[in-house]
Length: 453
Image (cartoon, rainbow, N blue to C red; front, side, top):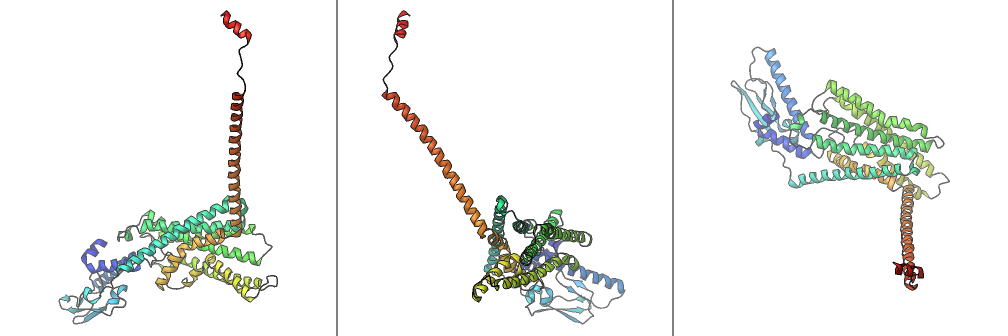
């Protein structure tokens, strides 16, 4: 069906193709829908609405004067009386022409609608996409791919460090391991989703509805939810640690597990059921039905809001502790310590996502591009770096183990060398003795026995 539409009018194809180039890299990692599919879906909805309007006219009026509602494969021209001139602005044709002041006119005559004047191609000039711009988009996609790959490697290495050394087996590091795991799921989900949904740059994938693509989108949404909730758990744990010094954290650990993995699973289950019963079309990658989209976005927004409150409270606690008499230092050193603590907390709590959490999805697309794809892809790497590889205890333990392995290797080499030296010395001594001692002469009994024979 879609190929037939595109073949009927070249402008439709040009509009959709250009929209892909413009919006491909402004697609947010928090949304699974491909921007190209958004344009196509809007086009199909407009056609369906136009068809319904035309059918209603047939049912409600036996004799209709003037021109009936008509779909010209690009825009719907609604019913008009004979002699009326209808005009449509280019901005109504497509969002790509938002800054275009051109108009298209049609007259309603006794013989029906007149031809377009001017044509879409002449009235609405498509903005051109420079080669440097498309190259920039391609480069930026490579950057976020490198970012997620770097995060995967660093996060897996950090988990190995925390699990391999018994010294790091504690509640704090267990929470870090779960946070790292959520970042791993998020990076993996991006790669899986790109492979399943966006490998083919044609429009056919916009209408496919397979279990694999639905599963990829569901896994992607779960990874997003788990990542946000484990950021919330980190904030809750840090606040509890600062506010309640003498409280054992072990008894809260399973509550943290329930929040970090249980709540995302519950939310995703509700979302899957809602999609299955109310909007089971495509790959579940659209946001057309608001209440279904808010099943995912609502908990994420609430977690960000709660984490922001925790973030402010943690900063307040740190300020109070830095001002205490036992800390020492002047105001500048206090400010420096507070600034360092804040910079450490920002990537941990994901506070940079608060900038766009409560704004419409189409607000600040360029800034979203940098934050979601650029900064977001490297967030796992930054978190692993700050809370594992730059940790003093981790560095000291790694140096200790490295020194121990070097000493074991040196001792093994020395022992092997001493063994070889001892064996060589023994062989040398035997050879010297054999050369220096006189040869034994045969005994008289032996000589006689030989003669008798």
